[in-house]
Length: 358
Image 1: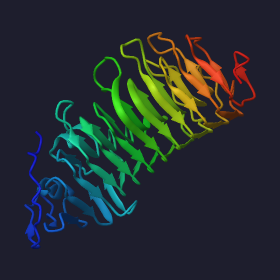
Image 2: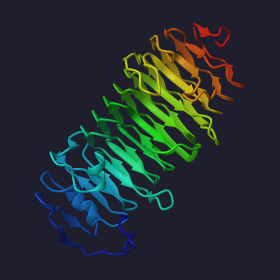
Image 3: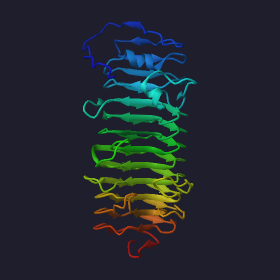
Image 4: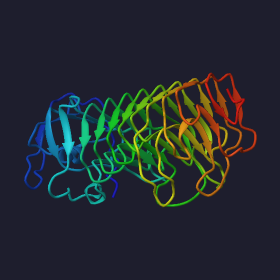
């Protein structure tokens, strides 16, 4: 259930220190209401501070290890740690909230009709959860910055049914699925939705199944990321639904040596050595990327690869331009579905399939 939206009390000058209600087995953190800053020390409950916060408040988490699942349903809340020395990891028994039940670390949860807005998560490490490290569902303008997600059972971080998200300057490594995963929705079919300018930029993504996955979305940019040592670097996933996934930018990323092996699933063949892959996408601009030394024998192996979607939908109207590629095998640039109106201009590469794409 959503936390009621409380009106911010402007002009408050007195410093009020209150004691939060204790959760079982944990002490609540003191709160500085005048500064709207809730300080959480090791041994105290982050969730208790979140529950006590009003829109606009900041939860400052001091260095230490905190074992709980955090559920956020309050607008304009900031959750900030002290870098990788602030660690969130699972407890033996999950927290008694929706995030704990789902097996995620931090959940920001609203609905498509009434999204939670302007939640900011920064400067902490989220590791070891059974499902996703950080997950937004029904959010607007959720920001994740300078945060590490590591060794989580599915996605490192991501969102669904959400708009205007920002994932900037993070590290997401050794997660079982994606470093960053963005989708229209995870539990239903349907056409692509408008992400309204969601941005994935400046992240370091390694050791995951895939560095970045964008599934059935439009109006989104993946730019300036360093993506290496995954099974695949970037996946842009669409299908035959209307509207098609597309109107996306994949630009100025460094995508190299994504040569780990990931076994086949019921939807995809095995993945290895895949740099940037488009499947069933439309109107995507792949521009100015450095794509090197992605090597494998999967149908999707190579530097930049256009491949028919799992339901047989071809790529269409995509523009592949000004990319620099070398050392990718079996090809630096591979158009394997021959979809309509894809263009290839000013790319620098050693080998393309078919020839003439460089």
